[in-house]
Length: 344
Image (cartoon, one colour):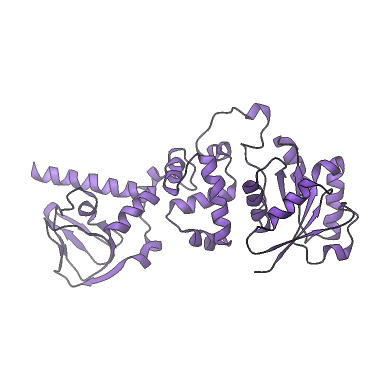
């Protein structure tokens, strides 16, 4: 990975020294550069050679922020500028961002939040502090709402909401990074403020809070229960089985150690007179009930291709993917109800 070169346009002092030391800790390597003149306009072409990011003191340039940023954008549009500022008022921050900054970092941020902010900025994200640090007086005690409003009130950025949605699908840090075009280290850094904003300490707790408050992208999980269940991303963890017509997949009373997804063909649940087809799931009762016993028999009525998901992976998936958990709950309830009706 190429070394990042960050040019600090800050007055000499303890703050500048502390920031330089922090930036040196960023993943992938970071070299902090300085100039004698801490002015954006005074920068020369040789000062900008190889620079990945410029950091300016928004308080020092004050009302000239917009003028200097516009002049810089004309001269060196490929070199982004981030700012430090003492204000934590949302209107002030929005004004600074509108002037052309790619990020605004409050000066009272702690070390971890400062590192997070710059890691995201260097990865190409537009960074502004969340509502817990940047708010106007009338917004400070606003009630939380569901949906997009809830994400705003929790202080989740669009990038964090996307990470949370992928997290809820059971994706690993590496898979989330691949989906978003970033690095696993960036995902690890992003999880820290997500957990802090949600008031949780683990991935599972984050998913529960996100589901409860409607923070996930897309339709709520309760609306997805009746939609086709997408297990394509799980296929590398499933075992393929091919059976001839008439094969008994399991019998009533057997111990259930797997649930199944039909890829091709038909399977009859003979005890309740139900025939399942492509993309249907079965075998969930033996996996999720306490005694792990099959309550019905399953027989192939055609040649069948199946995908089998082991019990441990199915249970883990219920923890990490609320939509999957609700679908399993719906299936177990409906099939146990069918059993009761048959026995009546």
